[in-house]
Image 1 (cartoon, helix red, strand yellow):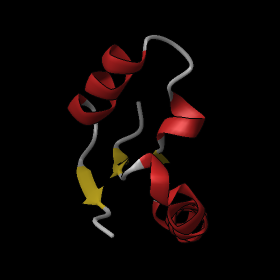
Image 2 (spheres, one colour):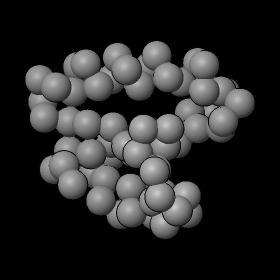
Image 3 (tube, one colour):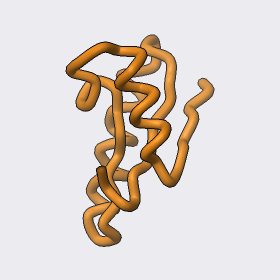
Image 4 (cartoon, one colour):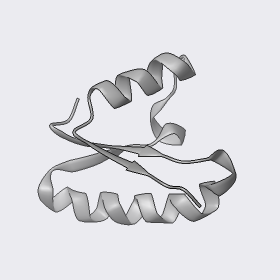
Length: 66
């Protein structure tokens, strides 16, 4: 896992709003070696275990409450 992993938390109903924000964070993060853990991109396996691993290995946590 990345050293500067940012876990993104959001409600599925807000995906259209959150996705472009995550893309912008990732574009900026390239300069700092940061990547986002974002469920549509990163949970290809068991959903609950995948989220737990993402949180466990993240250094930062962003929660979108819209």
